[in-house]
Image (tube, rainbow over all chains, first blue to last red; front, top):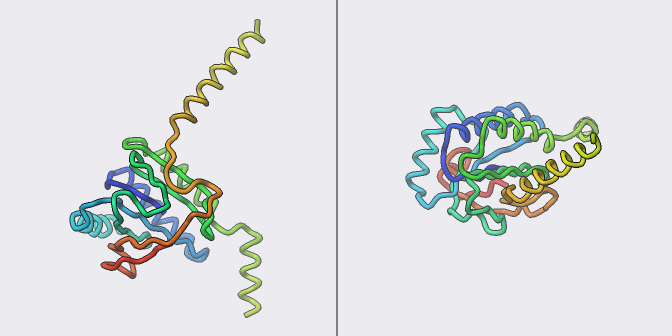
Length: 134
Length: 56
């Protein structure tokens, strides 16, 4: 789950990488979405449609919420991008960036953290057993 | 002499880490929290495009 305020080249790079990870981990039921926090719903909607089609984003849902972010999520006013990796509603990693702080190295460390929300080998074995029992 | 240099270096590292920690931005639910609750943003793409739908 990513909260962002603006579309930028680095954010686009992050979204494309997360989209690819989501495709790669479909069997683990990984999902992903980006919520753009904006008061200009109409303008942002057009920008997001164009982004999805131009960049071929197919697995990561793009959405819009109010500028303060959802209630109870405590999205900082000066956070340009907030990335929350979670599984079963439990947060496994959090990355927050002010304007201009998200760079290629940060994108790589976020993508690396995706493993934290994927099932480990034991979980995979358990799921395989359950599927075989059905 | 070497010991004094080591202490000096440790202090610099500790000060650097403190400054980094003070500068780290906190935003969104923290690691270990279970505060991932439902909300309904307007979906622009995906199965519910054009509608407010929870994605959590």
